[in-house]
Image (cartoon, rainbow, N blue to C red; front, side, top):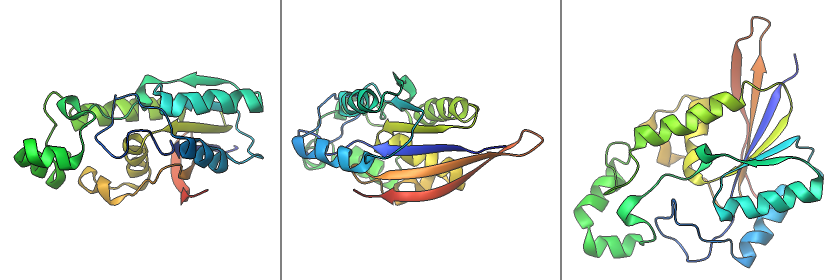
Length: 200
């Protein structure tokens, strides 16, 4: 049986600089658009694009889908984690206003949730539920355009990495990773990492 190939593409550089940006819906910078175009290339043969609804992902996804004449659909499960009261704040700002909770989060992001934010376990369950639905599809070639958090969760699932070690996986802007889903004659699926953080 043929394999299912899934590319995971993180959005490019975003307006507003580095901050806790989960549900904060900032657009790509001009450089971010260039990064995404380079990352996607011109000769890919995706059968479908599935994108986070955030405009930093969705606007490029829609343009790419139109250019390549392939279907594109948004998926709520691909949203970044919701940072709650920390949304839009920089680490430097939080170091001044919420230092203890920020330090606790840096040391244990799995168990330390930002105030009014999305608990990690809920975030992980959301992403993996969507991922497990995608990998049940018939063999084809799919592009997911999303954020660093969901990509880390998916790669950790593929590689069997404990949640506590997620932040050891760096996911730069506009980086592309590739996963292969193989199915044996009994119908059991196996995942493998083909490429990690390929850069434009």
